[in-house]
Amino acid sequence: MSSHYAHAVHRASVWVADVAAALGTQDRHYARRVLRAWLHTLRDRLTIDAAAKFGQQLPELLRGTYYDGWEPSRVPMRYNAAEYVQRFAAEAMVPPSEVPAIAATVTHVITDHMSPGQVAEALAELPAGLRATVQDGAPAGEPVEARRAAAVQPSIDDRLSALTEAVRTLARGLEGHPAVGRGVDTEQVARAARLADEILVASGG
Image (tube, rainbow, N blue to C red; front, side, top):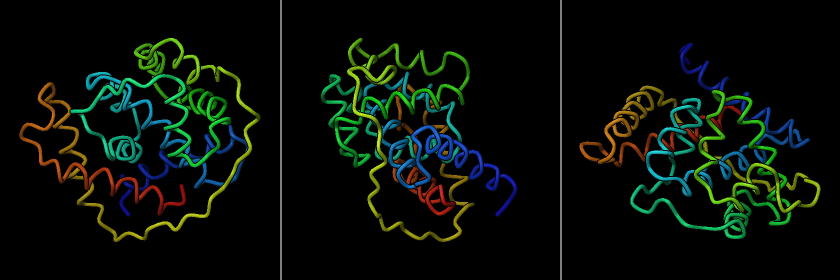
């Protein structure tokens, strides 16, 4: 693995490790599911512009996780705080009652890692009730207990050069907004997102 990818894997793994520590668990797979759910539920509630701007701040591999499954034609999805909790719980595989506390914890971790004001700017796009849940854990949930589900993680080939080109394609496509997808190989973008996510899993994150 080249030094570039070693650095990319390390940087993403640090984020996952910090989420795990903040949640009081050593289960990296649980922390990764929670981080993924946080990224996706925020992303889908944002406009294309806001989502792309936020994504630019993420580490390379987490950017792949962030964009995995994104459908620009369907955003922003107008869900409220209660619907957010259900979406988050389903993706992270946690009880809905724990979502507000978990989401607020992840928000604080990500805020510490990103440029000053970047998370606040993204959260400002949300309606007040939903923003309070994501940012402050309101309404207060039960104390967070890490409920781990054994998951079979996929193995991957060493396809790092493919990831490089595909993620670059993704970046070029977003820079070309407002016509996201114009001149961009959307299948390659989807492969980039999946591959980045798989590499992060394989790294132990």
